[in-house]
Length: 68
Image 1: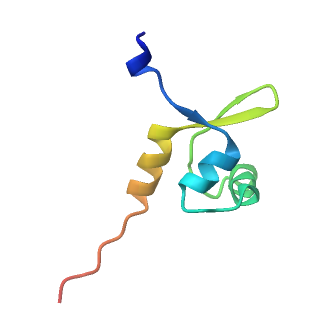
Image 2 (image 1 turned 90 degrees about the vertical axis):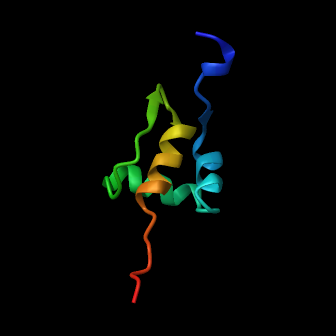
């Protein structure tokens, strides 16, 4: 795997900021309550989010106004 194809991982604080300035506590709550199907990786006590998963999550939350 080349460095160009290496996935980018963000910690909870970075992921929360990427998602529009959410609090890291919000992501912790979503994870523990399973409120949203936002994939994450946990190794030991560390939680990481793939950038591509965060982008897909935002795209899935995109809404369009109905045309009149």
